[in-house]
Each structure stands twice: as structure tokens, then as C-alpha cells.
Amino acid sequence: MATKLGLLVNEADTVLVAVEAAKAGDWLYDKGKQAGVVVTQDIPQGHKAAFQAMAKGEPVVKFGIPIGLADQDITPGQWVHCHNVLDITEELLAKQREQILSGEIQFDYHTRPYKSQAPALSRQMVMGYPRADGRFGIRNYVIVISLVQCSNTAAQKIAGACGDIPAIVVEAACGEFAERFARTRQGFVSAGIHPNVYGVLLLSLGCQQADPQDIADEIGKHGKEVHQLCIQTDGGQTKVIEKGIELVKGMQQRASEQERVPCPIDGLVLCAYNGGSDWTSGVASNPVAGDALDIHDSWGGTIVSSEGLGRFAYRASTLEIARQVVAINQRINEDTIARSGKGVSSFNLLPGNKAGGLTTQTEKDTGTGMVYGHGKLRYIMEPGEIPQGRGVWGINQPQGANDAYHTTNFSMSGAHVCFFTTGRGTPIGNAVMPCIKLTANPNTSQNLGEMIDFSTVDVLQGESTIEQAGLRLYEKLLDVCDGELTCAEKLHDWSYTIPHGTSYNGDYDKPCEKNG
Image: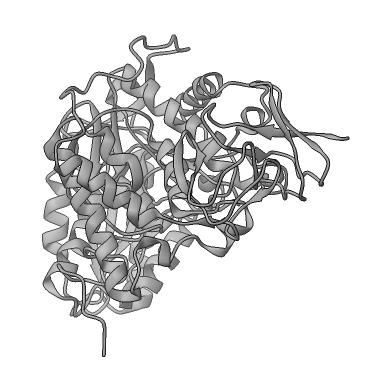
């Protein structure tokens, strides 16, 4: 009998995760919790084996909560996956709604840090660039923003000639409905006023929807150096590119002359996101990123967070905020029901999630939610709003699981750095916000090293605790703030996708009616 490494995520769980693939007859064992089971079927890596018997209709428990129901009788050691588990995500969300709206869940109305004792750090200051609006940046980017699709090429050529600096381009930004254009405009302004940005070049065609002077004025209010060029009035594309290169290089020179000064870590705004997830994300990388955010909260820092699905509402500091989160989740669910006849589980899980061992949307959401830490949610902002104080600030943007939308959304609220967890791997970065990429997947860590900044494989394999890795990750953050480039920065991945409207699949206030 071979012994294979297993993981009992929570002592209340009825399933054991196969950290190593196991064959029928192997002993799947969590040495830390000294718990194991003889598997009766082959269990692929990342998938679940029954740790105890579950009769049909009984909960399948992971993370200490039900993630679904047994769709048939399941005996210890059996493979537990989509073939014998019923996804009850919609029912669980409805129960959560009922508990919160009825007042069954009590909220303690505080935003005290989860960690009552702030851990010792190597330093309490980072070197930053003071800004005229009172904030500071940990980068001094010069960026190029195309205000309409027609000027994208010029923006990209200017950026490429100036060292592959960030160039923000758009799909349209012309002929958009008022709600969508308001968000587009906000995306332009938010990029320009971001604390990590020194200066901005705005490029336009001349007949687009956006008024370049309006955008320049808003960015200039924050003390930024801002220039604008128009293809139709400044001599055509070739001349605009030549002039743009000259302007950008001038800003780069002036940016390089600005001195960095010590800035307190509690002035940093942080965020975290889980993209390209797999079975390792929810059990290692996400909890580690969440722990790093909890450290930041304990030091009096600021965190911006997604509105989230699943158990995020339980982290609200007040009943009113919990109801706001429930309403956001309900809108997402109603949207998908109107379009597909079923709720969020109709478009999730994705094939890659299932292949990696995730069985239900609730399992995925619960694991994903761990990336946000434990801090109490004190306010729900609209996209582009800047948090006005310490603690955790949520953002009302039900965009769905899209990496570029979410990271851009966080950056629009001024986040300095993002902890970006990934299981399967992704090169994505952000035009104004460094992304520290971390993974617990051994294959991803080894084979995609050019995209990965931080490994949590040791946590997955039981060689390090979440708290130990969280502290190491926070120290990595301090190094990045002091100038260490992230992998995405080295790859010049400057993604910036403005999250439009109120739905991932359309711009409207209410769910659409199904055709026919």
C-alpha cells in the first residue's frame, strides 16, 4: 500500500483532497492532521476522496461548509466529483439571503482588524513618490491613453518606442450609451490620477465621444503632468507618433529626476484576486494572500475588495452592508437566470476548474473568497471611488470572473499593488498597478516561472503554515514597493480593461427578458 499526500482542509470536512494522485488501494494521508483513508478508486491530483460515508442527499463538506449534496450513496475512499455531487449553489445563496434579510445573522458593527496583534516586519516604511493630492506612489509610470479605438495604433507605437511603457487602449469609446460612456470616462481619469502614475499622454482622433480637455483637466487637478495630441488636428498619425514620443521621453526624464522618500506602509492600498484558479488556489495560495491582507489591516492599512459571491456577505460590518452585498449577488444570479434559465452555476464551473478537481460553484467561490482575508467590510464603493480611510472597502461591480476587469476595477480605486493568485498560470499585469503573482501548483511554479513571483507550494505540501507564508508574502510586497519589478512588469503586460455597465454580459439596470 503506497502512502499519498492528502489534505483535510477543515476537521469538519467529509472529503480529503489528493495533493498527490492516488491509485485504488493507496493510503491518502494528511500527516499534519493525522487523518487518512484508503481510496477505493483512482483519485486524480487535486480531486477529492470521501473521508467518511455520505448517504444520498447528505451534505458534502469542504472548508467546513456544505459545498453540495451527495447525489448517491458515497462510501469512504470513493472519488467525489461532479458525477456524484449535486451543485446547490443557488439554494445556498437563497438560504444566505434569507438568513441576512430576516435578521437571523447578527453583525457586531465593528471594523477591528482580524489580527489583534500586528506581526513584526523588516520595515514600516517604503520608498515612494509623494503626490500633490496627498497620496504617494510606489512607481513613477508615464502612461499613454488612447481615448478612442481609432488612436490605439498610435498609442501602442509611441509606448513601444519609449521602452514598452503602459499603453491603455479601448475597444470603442465612441457611440456608447451614456451609462457605458460614463464608465469609460471614469476609467481614463482613474488611470491618469493613479498614485503610481507620474504623467500621461492622451491621444485622440478628433471626432470621438470623449473630450480630451475634459479628461486632461480632471487628471491635472491631481497635480499630474498631462499632454494631449489629436490625429486630425496635429498633422496626422505619423506626426502625432513623432510628437508623442518626444513628449513621453520628456516626461520620463522629469519622472526619473523625482526623488523617492520614506512613506508609511499604512498609506498603501492593497487588493487581491484569484484568476486562472485550480484546486490548489483555495487551499493554499488564496489563504496566504488573505493572510497578507490581514497583516496589512492589522497595521492600519487600506484594502479594496471585490463584492464577491458566496460567504462574502457574512464579512459585512453592518446589516445594511450585508444587504447591499446580497443585492449585488442577487442581481448576478437573476441576470444568469434570465439568460440561461439557471443561476450562476450555469456558466461556472469552467471546464478547466472541473478538470482540476473543483466540483461545485460553491466550492470554487468559497476557495476564491479566502483571497480577500478576514477583515470586516466597512463600505461599498462604486467603481472609481477612492477609499477614505483604513480597513476593507468593497466595490459594487458584478462583472463576473474576468481577470482584466477585476484588476482594472481595483486599480481604479487607487490600489498600489495586487496579490494575484493563480493555479493554472497567467501573465496578466496591470497598466498602473504591479501584480504579485503567486501559485501553489508545483507544475505551474516550475514550468511557468517567468510569470510567477511567489510560491506557496510549501503550504500545499504541509512544510509551511499559512501564517508563515503570509508574512513572507508581505515582506515580498515591501520589496516590490521599494522597486523590485514583478514578473508581469518584466514581461511588459500592461492590461487595463475598463469594467463597463452593471453586468458582465451587457449594459442594463435590470435582467433582460429571454427571447421567445
